[in-house]
Image (cartoon, rainbow over all chains, first blue to last red; front, side, top):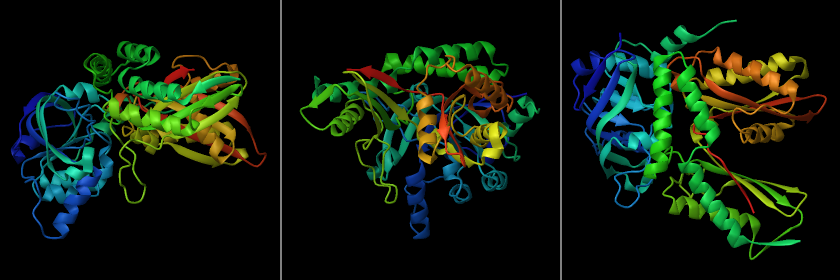
Length: 186
Length: 279
């Protein structure tokens, strides 16, 4: 039976291993954004033997490229982008201690195996609910790669950002579970 | 001839781009409400609840519906009795997009395909112009998200593959899209024409009002058949499992070469945004 859990990073292996697919997770506290271009830059820094602008130990990465904030607002729309584009970079970041990612859509078998190996989880947020999710974001500031605009790494302070566990540390996949339950074969 | 000044075109495109990104159509909202009532899966119903909330927050709090404010597609029907004055027609459409995305606090999501350098103003929009009878200008401004466009496909089938081949192409495309392209989807299907026309038909079919019947009874029945097959996949809202993977299937068809059977499938995420204006 799925449960509701509140999580605030930094996360430990015990925090994430307690999660199972289908659990509803409300995320609060500090999380970092990164999508395609920021991941590319992180890989370039690692390849050059340079430190990353953010210590990923125990942290959560949110795959999002927000729309611009109106004057006086924290942020614009800020829903998740498709996670599979980041798959190629993810095992490297998990090895560095990243504990969770928030996105939408399927992960590769390599990422699912790496979640098991490094004890981390993949959380789904509702794609296309950018206005709704923006209401959970209390603060936002760019901490790296400002020239990338919406693709820059932002430090967000969030409160009760609603997610669901898609891939857990046991190698399970909520999307496969859903198909098993609802697919009708002719 | 009727004179139409480009400043009116710029203003109309600017406003349509903004409104499309903040306000969903009544047909889509009705489909969300129907989904909330009909979806069997609890997580699916929760998604519909969030999408209805999202639409309300976007409109009342002035936050775009989705952070992906799209690559802008513009369909233009230019009456042949319209005389455009004061500047270039296509430049006016692009200027409207530029102003709308800047003034509307919309995300600029257009970049050079190789260097990935952002153009900074969401242009160039993709423009499809037709010359039609009359003295009016009709524009459809359609912000199209990258995630759903990425999962769209074009098939050059053999004529022998027939309807079964088309059905497998459509259902297979949705199966492959799975949870990635923000279901529940609206599935645009273009059949016939040629390589590029099939894709254009698929995209254009998405402009039809959601829930409306295809005027061709044969195509209406085929749309129903495809919708049932898609919803039998069980992908469900956001891929969490459920009965409603698609809210509608729209077909547009035109004759093709005797050697060909082109089929295009344009996946539209649930954030189906388009605005029609007539000048």
